[in-house]
Amino acid sequence: MEDGVLALILLAAFVALGRFAAEVYAANPVQRVSIVAMVVAAPFWLWALYNTCFDSLDLGIFSLALAGLAGVYGFELIPAEWPCGSTMVESGLAAVTPFTFRAASTVGFGAVCANYILGLTAVSGWGMVTYMAAGLLFWLGMLYSAYAATSSVEGDGHLYASLI
Image (cartoon, rainbow, N blue to C red; front, side, top):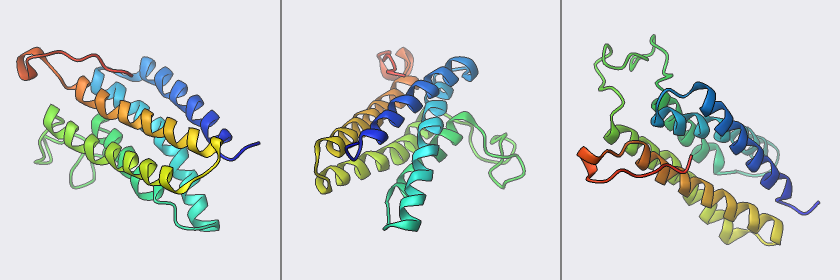
């Protein structure tokens, strides 16, 4: 099998699984984007960790961790016993707002986009190029979806439709 084809198949499978999980568990558009981000980032972070341990440094261990943490933040899964707390208002931090979620997702999802752009410059072969391009398009779509999930006619003047 050509390099990258398995990754492409797994990307499609985890995007589908994330969308299914979002249908079941999300209570609002921000949670929907967050669930998909967590479901897709987790297995690819494990893959990046494996690559780093047994081959060479894979920057996905950093970028995918940031994307997963943005999803955790958006879904408000941070444990209550941590200083920032799950009930963020009680801990002194502001609740998830459009601005804070946009900021967290821009850092997290943007880091993954940068990683895929870097990967596109370093790979060859149709399988890896296709996987890197598909991954980049997916995370760019997630960036847009994070913005759309927090848009409102009152706040932005427009209402955007999420891709997720």
